[in-house]
Picture (tube, rainbow, N blue to C red):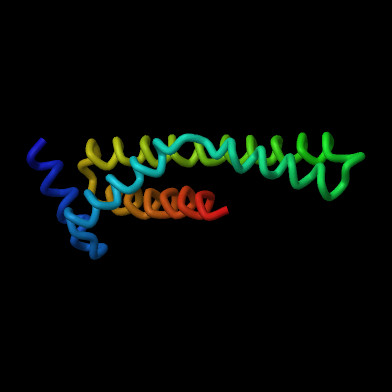
Length: 118
């Protein structure tokens, strides 16, 4: 295990990320992932749809709910990918694989963050 941790630290150093930075990002990610869904936002969207197009508010609200659900599913998928990659990063011993996993992990985390900004 110590060898794996040493390799992981070495890989992080190669890409310019400190262990403290990684821990900070991890805590921030956990905080964002454990936030409750924004049901208030959906309620406001439904009210807005009703005010803009009273006759079509049901369809617009349904479409908004479907879009929100699709985004949530996509976000959950990226989060699962991140979790899987983090587990692989800990277990991997091959340095080339560590580099590939780290790069893919960074991309997956960015996608999760981009979805959070929507």
